[in-house]
Image (tube, rainbow, N blue to C red):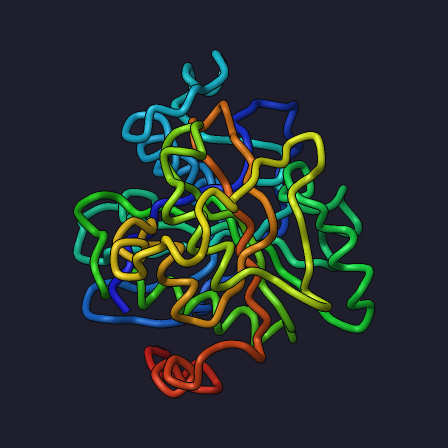
Length: 292
């Protein structure tokens, strides 16, 4: 499963943030491959370092538009950072402290936390509440703000990120994951082939139905199914979205243009029961494949 992690959820903004006091304890390594390891952030300084990595990728590389304060601080920050858990990949071969070793990150928000702290960020683009209401007995978690530094966009890094996500989901009894996947640019029609392929082949249905907010809805049905070349469509998909598909994910109805990040977003929905047996066997049903 070689996929490049380059995604995010949300807008760059700088609210008045309170100090985060709940971080992971030492000794919580979720997995190791060679010199790379994955775990949750243990301190506010590590979260700050993860925000710096996000800034380098989203703003300096992808040319997202930061607020003046975010540009001054060179940090990608929003109000959800103080309530989310931050999954990190670190290269322990790099000399220095842990903050200097962070090469990749994923932001995780559990439903029980979101319920207490203002909801999920994806709800600003997609009708998440209707999805949650249909599953009152299930536990959801949102994945977002994922990125990896260019030199580390390798199979090993991706495997560790998924190892961390899977171990985290098991620990917290999560039944389904969701989050935004992004296409570059704010003109959906440029991605007509890929968006139409997703619409016709992996669209959510039934109890998992979820749509873009009506005022933001952009159609993904831009080409008839019979006109789609599957091979070319797969090649046109961003690596992250393709990786989610391989795991067994579905895609919500309608896309949303994020003008701040200059992306076209789709909602990825991945019920745990949908995860391909191939990947469950690879990582281990109890997430032991790369466990330390």
